[in-house]
Length: 459
Image (cartoon, rainbow, N blue to C red; front, top):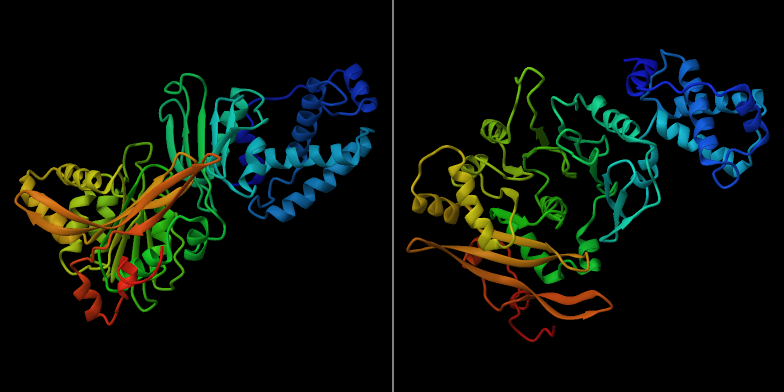
């Protein structure tokens, strides 16, 4: 689709040209909120923006951002000179960046998408914008002009992705080209104006060393988890929203040998695997006619026909849990998955519920036996009160005792203090060794007793 058509579709309102007297005033007065009125600044911005859109070549490829930006810069300079609009260098640059963000980017949110340390952008209506930076949520001094402005930006985000959002379909989940996750909700279900949430993923994936440096995990726990991945243990990662499940899944998948075939299954492709032999699958929502939906469960079933050595599921949230457990129990060892839960024990209960969501009327004991046989480890992460994300438990699934799944905690986070609002603590071994140690040894992996807190190593 041409640049002009795509822009015109998102520009729903026409900004009227200023009256001659106001135009003359703008030529003399610097167009800055600090110097002139805010209305004058917005008027100037909209006029220049609309004229640029009207004069841009419709055949220009909008995906070639550098070329389009250079063209806009040339036309912008000529326009300011032609209308004798006087701006300082700083004001001129600021106005240009805002206009480019409106035409090519995401308007007022553009700068936060590239700001270091920002992991989440939350928009609650046109006048309330929040960001999460360093684990803390703060309100920023940025607003949209009105509800229509915010709706145009939301449409600009989702339209190129083949998604739609309107009164008939007022919710949408999507992802940006860089992998960032987007959720938008608009009226009538959003009563106080459109709400937009963007989960930003680091351009450079976090490494094990980063997690150790942040205090999210210890070298001993990393050594143990690496051994488990290499020995093809089935690992389930649990935690609440924003607790770092996907980040940990990314890191654990990095321990998979390069000669194995990996199939990843996600609602929105977020994983950044470094191996070459990777097949990435993504679910799809139904179209306008209600057709064409492809669920995670469909992808899990299909993946088993693709000869995978490992199956990685970004998040288990429904009936696909049954197919995942069956895969883990039928030769697809070493699989990884994540799910939402408040503790490892809660995760097991949720898995049982999700299996029932598949529509199979199975006895509870049969489901628990499937879970106990399929999953070897549950790694649980939490987002603590200071905003930090830490691995708080690594538990082995040992089997069944009567009708109960038995677990044994291998590592547990121990909080020792709170200093200046920061949680002080460490993930410590409990002194127990997992029952599957023999599987690690069969693979040739011999973990030292100190990994499990046995011996003379001080902590």
